[in-house]
Length: 317
Image (cartoon, rainbow, N blue to C red):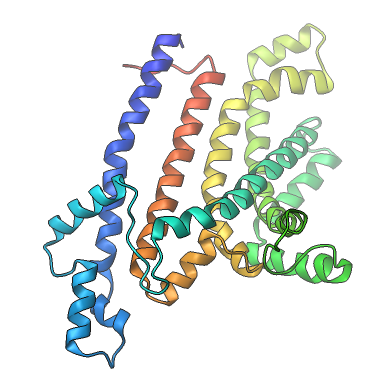
């Protein structure tokens, strides 16, 4: 791919974000209309007077046509205004900005650790297909895929955090050292839950590349072992590896909700659960928008990286 075609591809992908974002905003606006019952009544409670309900309905914009509410919401989001929380009275954007670093730390940290582990395990597995190491890795993958995140978190709390007292089991602490220690087990929880599917997918990709013509040609030139795997097989599997990592990153982002609840971490996953239980609709809309945008951005970055590292990619204008 030439530099010009890469540039055109990146610009095209960025332009596709516009209708996607508008669609995401449409869905988040529809959340109020799809809520069973009267959202204003759910917020005020069954004993609220009709005047209180009418006031809240006006605050939520439910007294306006849907199209007007959608347009208002789009312009407000463009200005960075996601509304005000019904429960805390704080700006939704400010709350999300405060909680987002925790969620990103867990998700990104888990992805990085899982990526390193999966590369090592997959490379070890393909050195000798159907060998002892390969069979052990395949068994670990089958077992790991069946382990839910909340179970992994409970096991780490019960058998690592509590016996050793080296890691907090709730909260993030007040200083940097405690904060780092509090992040280790949540990151490890996400990493363990992602390593098995990533390893299995990467192993299959590496085996396909391993049987390709250019790898056979490299063998005839004397390349073998880790030199062959690292220099030819893994390098040519980098593109599919990015796609796998992107798909698992989306899963990791939503998986942080369970992890944050298990470790009582004030991230956006925990915030979404709390906001939903309290029927704080502006917060729920804000969290939904952030999660959706994060997924879109993850796949956009994956597409761009794949186009940059894989010379075989060709994008038609």
